[in-house]
Amino acid sequence: VVAAVAFFLDQRPLARWVSPTEAIAMLIAALVHDVDHPGVNNAFLIESEDPLALRYNDQSVLENHHLAVAFSILRRDEANILTTLPRPAYREARELIVKSVLSTDMKHHFDLVAQFKARLSSGNFSLMDDEDRAFFLPLAVHAADISGPMRPADVSKPFAVRLAMEMARQGDQERARCMDVSAMMNRETQSLARMQGGFIEVILQPLLEPLMEVLGCPEHLSILRTNLDGIKTLGDVFYEDLTPDQSECVFLTVDASAPSPEVDLPAAAVPVADVPPLARTASAGEESEGRDA
Image: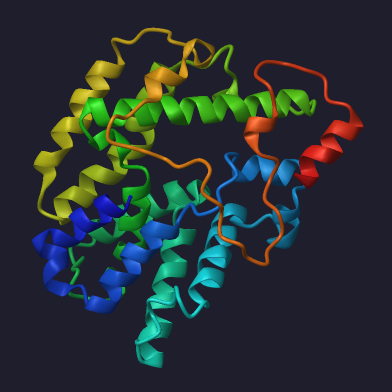
């Protein structure tokens, strides 16, 4: 996501008009937009009455949590990379970081796309205009967040597999808690091709096509279209058929033993790794232990 935002910022229409404060705010937003993510979505947290959902009143639960964790870390002297900014610039940066991370809540996606297209259809949209730019920058962070399929297949497919496996684990948790299993999370009925193909056609293309036109680089959409064509040849590879080796990326190394930052915030949702695959019946005690994990 950081790399995608950096790419957007490097395109002439943004490079010409974005201020240094706006640029650093966008990069920070991209960096922290999923910090301390529990591996389940907002709907799950709300339905299970997770402490995070209660804290944020069911409104953009994860996005508010990511921001709270990020700014808790930034308050530390050794981590505050914004400490040298004058107060007005700091307030500007914080406002843009907050708006950008909140914009990554998929609940707002279709409204944002509709607003974007309405602004473009007016014929007066310009990144030179402060109001248009203030709308566009958080939208660009949102686009970067979901832009994985714009990468070549050898990069994007492993991450698509990881996402599908994460979604299947949420479905396992829903089943274990006797909740309705979300259609997109059902490992027994959902396929990788259906998930990714629908995501590209319904979610990505309607946003990225006009966004890349504004940035003056629509040619980069060719990889997205190539990936969509390739996805349609996968057939019904169901979530339950996916294996961890299909999600390996030779260029990515994650230290799973590294400690998470300590912040004074409520615990996130039960870790998905604690719920075994496929259906099982959870006792009340198990549910209690999981919610306290």
